[in-house]
Length: 293
Image (cartoon, rainbow, N blue to C red):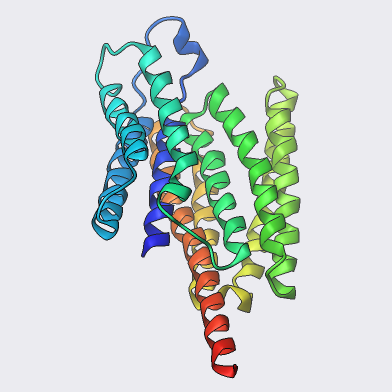
């Protein structure tokens, strides 16, 4: 339960940060209302608050510096939703939330039993940044998506060390998808031809990623819960390809955002289940080792 609430807190804080990233065009003139981004802000605030409340009840209190910083960040995030609030307040909010993200693991005493869990944790945060780009769709979210790809690649390298041969095969396919995704993001910044090439590469990356999750779904190292989580990740990819198709049509930004938010929920559930599945497998192994002794 503790690990699950920690994942909820971190994902909601990061989602909130992504939703607060300004469109560079908003520096000139008033920012426009973005309903999907607003929904992500509200989800981030409510989800983070509920996770913090659960930690407060289970721990009998939280470290004071952490409470002040994360509390200020969430309060400011609520304020910046209101019209007429100066933009610089949003930047302070992002800084407070990023500091909270960094402090949370140590302040809440969260420890992973499996080394692979750290990799799954990195991947979960990385994919959140990548997928949010289809919701926010501005220069800063694209940069965040690119950072997410590198974090994704790092997480896959960690996760690979604790998986069986079937799981390693899936990781190799996912790494190929990540490399293609990085190249696609960079090409996407080139007008006209770059966008076409990026779309082709993303389609190929989708195929490799889908195949990778299929292999993870068969990996015994993830446990039953983790394999179910891999199945949810494949479902999320189907939703994302639907969102990409809808995006070809004009005036469909809200629909794309809603589908992407649903995909984000499945991604959170899927990678959380993989992480918790590996933790359960490690606990079982440690318990059987103690019995043998």
